[in-house]
Length: 382
Ligand SMILES: [Zn+2]
Image (cartoon, rainbow, N blue to C red; front, side):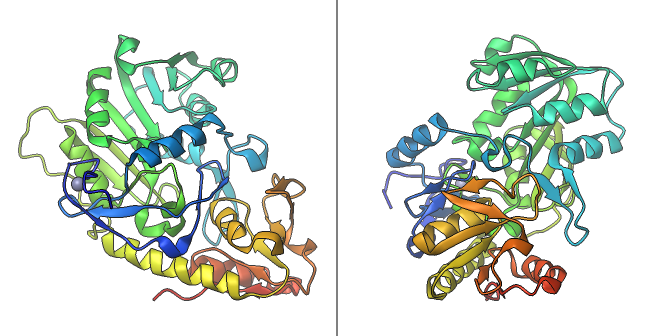
């Protein structure tokens, strides 16, 4: 590890995590990325993170230059499946419903969505709160027309946030903070954009429940409830709500500006583990999953067509026959030069690797057992 690399949240010293056997990564828009992650945790604030080296910056520039949001489903937002229930609801609609459920939002207000992507959250929030005026903020104008066509959107802002020159009642960072290389100062820079009493909503992957998030090359912080809450507090906010249930495998946090550094007690995090031990267990399990894929002989199919499936596909190479996806928006398409098919279309003699958390894998395999296909259960967690 380069001696000069320090924690990108608090400048604390870093301890490396073992990642070499993982061999490759995936970009957040699901392209295989041909290098192992460089992961570490901070000895001061415990945040699990990528090493922000000059090589990392070079990779990131290349990744963002070709970014294709939700490529496999043709631009539609990925459906977030309720574990076990099988019924899906788009992630953004869940967040909008969660926000509305707290009864904190006035009938009218102004929202700023930082890192609005292709406008998925703006669409869902606009439908939920039709009296609000919304502004999106992005790094470039590639989705400008689509975003400004969403009912309730005043404009897409491209450029420094300070140039917005005005304040908002609600600021959201949905799947943005984990990409930011200096999250604490970035969060502090949001405060001048907030009216007195305004709220900030953050959603990031939950390290405790997301082993595959460690493989996403452009995610530089891997937050647990504890480290996310600490980062937000250090930036000058008071945490009001922090849950891991709004969207499965995600942390959703609602906070407001700290009025004075007082006796306000932040809401207790849903899990008191900082995430370092979870990350170590995730990495050991990912190494087992990689070994299992390499030890499975002949042609294989891989269940899924997103992050974990892309990563496993990069390990099995030419032996991959197809991806298998239950999402009708994906089957019939192709990914990495291979077809995406429904579970009933996989030849019965082709073993199907299932790169899902063991409990989720068991539930999926149980649900599809009537198809008579050859599922390979992922290794157990150590
Ligand atoms: Zn730190």
